Length: 287
Image (cartoon, rainbow, N blue to C red):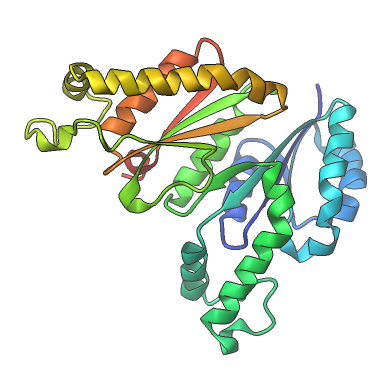
């Protein structure tokens, strides 16, 4: 079997340990905080002793050596190793809140507990700069508005996808809870007729037949689905040829319950015969 490696990087406080535990549950041999200088030799050694599936977490504590990682991953791919790189991210406000709640120090901080929130904000922005190149070359997962159980589920579903093919991730969300920072494309569908204002539909979702029937009767909804579908159909092949492993398409409405959910389901169904597809419903999955 070909060697599979999952590299997990991302912002401190974004949930890397949660993702690593999910991969361990999925059968990967996992190691945390591996220095980048040891990546190639560690992979060779562990391939002999622990099989074909490795998961490695790195963080900003290895900042001086992180620029080595993209080149190392490319060399591994050229040798036939299947490499997936996941980058966990979250909004700055979310990261500040998490550090404040846990009273943990940021890995790059000298003494943020004494210097206050301003120092923490500056440290987080410095970390973003240091990790920018790795983020650009990875599949990004925004953990700002999801629970640990959702993150574990998302990671496991990504690992279950066939290697070597572009995977389309369709995600619904509520604008009132923020735009996902991991989205490659964001479509705003708040201008479409809203089932929320129909008393018999308010408590249902875009996966329920009465809501589906209602939205099917709205010409604007079909026009929006057609326009999004045409855009993706035109550009997906080019993205695949550019060696993209994942493309995240986020569709948002006011509450993330009706219109965006319906369109995610419809588009995932439309593209599933041509591409590997995943569907996520950020607000519904959190219930």
